Image (cartoon, rainbow over all chains, first blue to last red; front, side, top):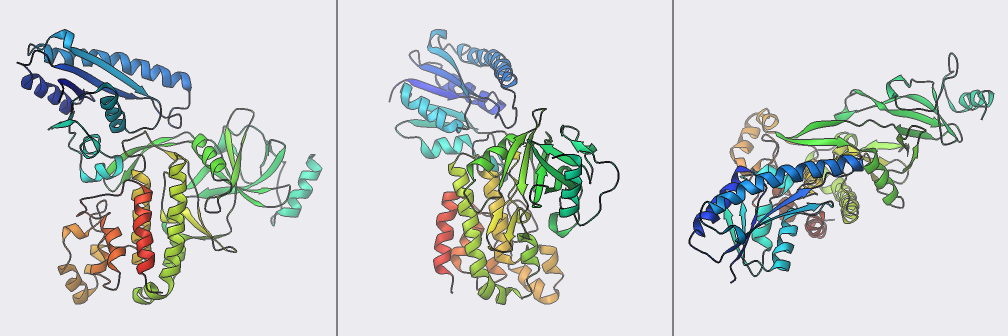
Length: 150
Length: 322
């Protein structure tokens, strides 16, 4: 088990709780290496046909997201996790790929030992219709630890 | 085609005389202004507008769809459904769950292209008018809506289930296979409903129609389609939907049935709709009921792909007594 942790955040209240949880758990762990990952989904061309509009949407979201991720990173440094050990990563996805698959791919390619996700508290109906990132990660993750923070 | 020839063709293919000056429309942007009797000139072809399609949902005459015109192709007299561009976004409710929905001519165009050789999807092509509107020219299916077909069957459930149901079920499995082919191409239908399957009068083929609904990408892109397929299965296996108030109205026999139902037996999305149909009709095989329970309130596991659903439906086919 290595000391690399991947926190997948969607910037919802629950995903920020996951950041807080990791911050508290790892407060005394000076060699921990934490990456905050956020996936921006480019709108589907069927929903937003104009390419320029889609690009602008992504750029605007990226700028907003970066600010929020920096805020999330401060929650980690506030618990004495060194800034140099915290990484921010934003992935833009322009294809209809499941976020869980992207997270699992990222874990595998970068060799994270732990994935941390928040749980959004979906209803059964919502889970049926839209699917759940955390459930999929729990079900499909291999060779790593998964923390689901509620 | 000059106006005299157009008038001649209109007289030849239309049962009703046309009145007033001939109005030939090339820009379809203002679809509300395109009226019955107008002629659409699109990519060198001429179509006589016969009126608007209406929603026609659940056997009722619904609201007219002003962007969908009934038409006659003046080249050969064939009936067409012409879908003009109407970019709308609205909140659709699945049970009580809201979902943002977008109407996308691009998506329907793509699916028409991808399913061109597939008999289980409506046929047509897209042309662009001079203002860049993607207009879909669809072959009108001469046949019956699946919803009406099932509702008009004159048999009690047990007779239906043993006699008509096996072959209907085979057709529905073919419809699910068609949706599975669509999913494997990276597309979703988007609006799977009992009245979006037509049964062709001549070939008896079950045909999916209307693929222009689109949604934002979600973790499970097939969820909305699977919900629709679940509804169609409930409707088909039950020969209609069975709701608690209807059962309550059946007197003592209904009350006896109700007493054995639990909240878990009801639909996940419609709180009064019975999903565990075996409790109403005990001759429904376990394998078939097992499929239905995936759409019930008590379900712990859901289908995530049409492949998974098909796998279970094929087991049902072998279990049905022929």
